[in-house]
Image 1 (cartoon, one colour):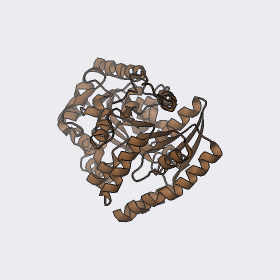
Image 2 (spheres, one colour; image 1 turned 45 degrees about the vertical axis):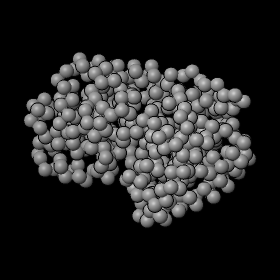
Image 3 (cartoon, helix red, strand yellow; image 1 turned 90 degrees about the vertical axis):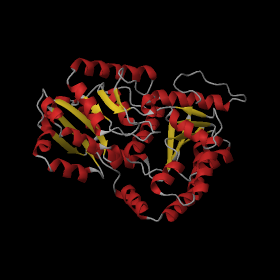
Image 4 (cartoon, one colour; image 1 turned 30 degrees about the vertical axis):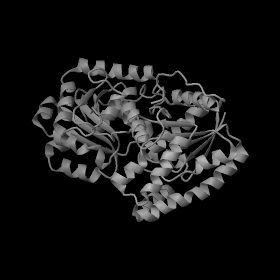
Length: 410
């Protein structure tokens, strides 16, 4: 097949990984993929290889947008449709794709418009309810416009994908027809987690080989709740258990974390703030962990970090929110904390302490987590295959529901 991939994303963080990996999976299955984008995935890939956010033009555009008044930013998002429609229409005429695949962005409807104009099937991938998210957190001026666009996109696509059942439920509550949305979680590469030199990563940080290491890998943002881990790292229980904390990454939350660590000589000895970790070293960082922690989650997202923890066979501590429970079973593949998407520091600390004291439990949970990931098919190549099947079904005169336990209508 020929696949035209469209996104209007700054292509950093997990967003860019998702963009690059699903395209790679399509290509591995023998398909030809062409990308139409405001910031191409290559910009993210270069940034991610360095362990940080997109720099250069991509980073400049991101910083400029962050300083704009909300009304101006939304106006530019809407204006982008005129540019994108022309580019997509030209690409459709030249490339003649079998379908258009779009990563949803707020106020962007050019993909659906161009696909309909040229009679090409349209696949929409939704990772968050952006109209709701922007209204709650970033401010949204043209709320009615953004919500109507989101609803019509989700309802009008030939295939609409949501990364969690929680997200699908939110979209249905907002007016998307029941049964329209197919739930398809994020993935990892099949081989991810099978390599990496954890011992070398520990040596670089000066951590004893027999220490118990709890860790997090990712981009540091305030909502990740990483300060809770430093709070419990200073407890007498963690100190007596000899637990070292490794936070591998960088981001806006780093200054506050450094300040917390500097306030205690004990934390400076037992807490490592690694800074940016290149993508090629992520597996080594994970291999250095005895316990991998996700302190908090967005309640409707499919946390890519949890899938990487599963693939690496790590014992996981995570929130017990509904979206996390779609991936993990408490006591079977992880220890999940009470408190929804944002557990208390004490609950996170107690779960890590339980695993620090029980090596057999760590091994059992880690092995079960990786086995569950493979059994359920949380892999990019599996997602690519499912999309193919869904597009074929959508193109039939009378579409027949696909029998697939992992990609079923919500």
